[in-house]
Image (cartoon, rainbow, N blue to C red):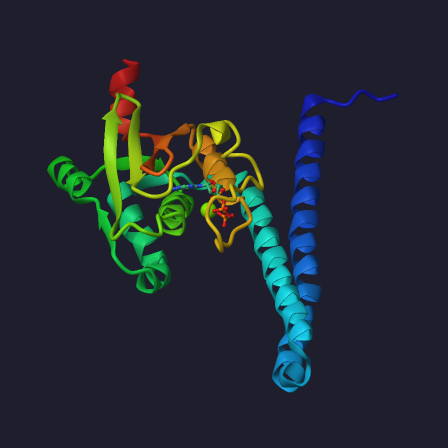
Length: 262
Ligand SMILES: Nc1ncnc2c1ncn2[C@@H]1O[C@H](COP(=O)(O)OP(=O)(O)OP(=O)(O)O)[C@@H](O)[C@H]1O
Ligand SMILES: [Mg+2]
């Protein structure tokens, strides 16, 4: 039998990865299409017959609608997770202040619906001005997802009886290689027993009623941060709030790298 060279093995692996990517892309679309059809017909049913069914029937319809939405979100989340695998191909110099502002823009619709929220990133903004930017090496889009998810959680898991939800975003540490950022809230907090599970897929704590979600948010965040060679952890006290910390690599100009390696 002819021997397969290393070059051929690499070529074969590359083709397998392309096949897998194509499969996932088409599975994503194939799964979404019947869901859109279901949703469309359900909307039509609502429009034409909602008034004609009794209360129990309406309750069933609402449950169906919610379930379809949940499956849709899950499929999108799983696909986002797959997309994380390839993000390091697009790493660039990214200003973290720009990322924070972009994340807040993306959260605008949530922010207008939830009153009395005070989001403060003045200090890190000041530091950034003094340093002429806090630059990390990463993907703008995925870094924005980190902030959107963690700030989104802070809003979702706020205390019902707290007048003002306070969210603080800042820089907690700087080393030669990394920046560590934090996002602190005064929300419901996370019990100690969940410390090791919170970043797992589909982990949800049933502490606050009527909060929607699939339990994928923090799993995706962790994956994104690890793809950036960073780490994420948190401190929390039940009923007092939570602080998420995460490290990201500093952007180093080629000039800096040369000096270091001399
Ligand atoms: N800031 C926070 N304060 C209190 N609990 C939190 C906070 N962030 C996360 N949690 C808890 O951790 C669980 C997992 O969070 P995660 O973001 O992964 O999922 P989710 O918010 O439930 O759903 P998804 O993000 O997929 O919409 C949440 O269900 C919640 O119980
Ligand atoms: Mg979440």
